[in-house]
Length: 284
Image (cartoon, rainbow, N blue to C red; front, side, top):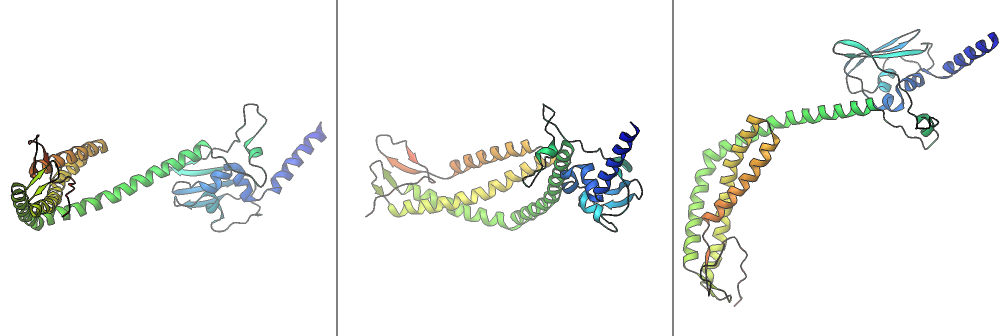
């Protein structure tokens, strides 16, 4: 019995000595966590039994990179890795040791699945959670950076619009509206495609297009300002989406209301072609 115990201790010592320090760390974390996961910023301690290694994490280096940073020897006599500690809320917290998953039969370990040249590493729940948390932080950081920039750009546009563009747009819009109304009154399209006043029909189409663009710019500027104010006040993306849909509907109603329609003759004299509609005119 005594000889058996001595043989077991000798085999355990031989196994530990066969692993270098990086392999000990990889066995402690699991290969995926060791090479892909970054510890939070702060002090990190690789608690080897003989020579503990202390590092300072910046949140961007993986455990593998952090361990090899600075003075480090793969075959250094650091002893057995008994634990790894990271800084959370100003305190050192031990990282749980990796435990290979098994299948329901209990015979196939994750180490067996990932053996050989065709190996792959299955992330554990802590690695997935850490990666998702990091992704959320990245999205939040990007949104906080882009949001103020969009606000400044929009503030500049509103200033330019109110100070200079709005009077110009109103002037040209009134001119286009006058041309569209006169052209609609001086032209007539029959239901058989016979056009009376072809020149005025073309003038109506071009002036209606220009008027529609001007109305879009004016309406979108005012409605978007209201939507952004509501979004900034409530902080709800749903409010922004609903506001955008309502704004587009209001803009469409304004354009259809303002732009005059061509007169169409026939047994349904009340029917009219909208100025924005595609109208096929006979050549000749």
